Amino acid sequence: MARVYNFSAGPAVLPEDVLKEAAAEMLDYKGCGMSVMEMSHRSPMFAQIIEEAEADLRELMNIPDNYKVLFLQGGASQQFSAIPMNLMKNKVADFIITGQWAKKAYQEASRYGKTNIIASSEDKTFSYIPDCSDLEVSEDADYVYICENNTIYGTKYKTLPNTKGKLLVADLSSCILSEPVNVSDYDVLYFGVQKNVGPAGVVVSIIREDLITDDVLEGTPTMLKWKTQADAKSLYNTPPCYGIYICGKVFKWLKAQGGLEAMKEKNEEKAKILYDFLDQSEMFKGTVVKEDRSMMNVPFITGNDDLDAKFVKESKAAGFENLKGHRTVGGMRASIYNAMPKEGVVKLVEFMKKFEADNK
Image (cartoon, rainbow, N blue to C red; front, side):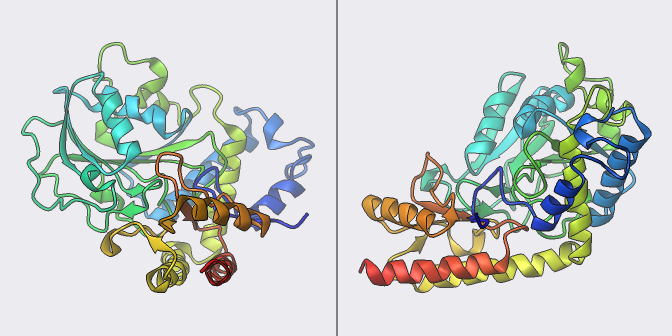
């Protein structure tokens, strides 16, 4: 069977070159006679895999030396707890709510201290990013939290909030490595890898070194202390070895593509093809205000639930997978991450044009 065009929001499409390389090494990694899945995480061979993965990520993102890179487990959702446990010295945190994931992080942090919502776009179903240039940041806030790209609702911060000198903590799960970022604009940034980097099961946290201390909330599990993980170089216990190995391959693939500047150009071109069609279509409409649109996640609707369902069904039959919108919002959503080829977006638009003509 031919490969489909997979528009899933995550676990998501991976570069075909990476999958072929991993397949070729499945039974015998570099002549060692075993798979990476079977390898001791204490072996020199795995040490090389994880060290190279970190070095390549540092190079791609230009990560300053005073930031630690941790390869962790538990997904981004586990960091919803780890962040307050490690950072809540005053037990106060400010949140900007732009979608479900920021909301979940806010709810989790509320278990550990006082949480304030200082801006939200919930009033218009998270279809825009609120103005964050002059927020009422709490004087005693330990940090300000954002989810930078909202996978479900298809919005993206184009300008980071003015945190008035407070720490900025950001979840970049669904936009990481899609374009260059200035790491030092953040104090903590983290991402689940299953959208733009690798298979589910790994979360990468990039944390300013001085924030990694023993001064954590009482009762913080050993595993959730960033210092535990940093001191052990992400090897405190058995890490998700195979997932890290695939992430490492994706980092090398990104370098071969020309790095993050080149990816930004490719991603802008792909997004433009889809958004230009949505803007001129009489049937399909994007759901996000233009200035806050995500390059990675593009939600759209016809305005008719039956027609939406018909589109999802027929698109699947035509080889376009996972275009159904998130269960909380309905409609459709095309996630066009780094590994989605331009050809996939072009073919999707051709299909949408035909569907529109056939269903007028």
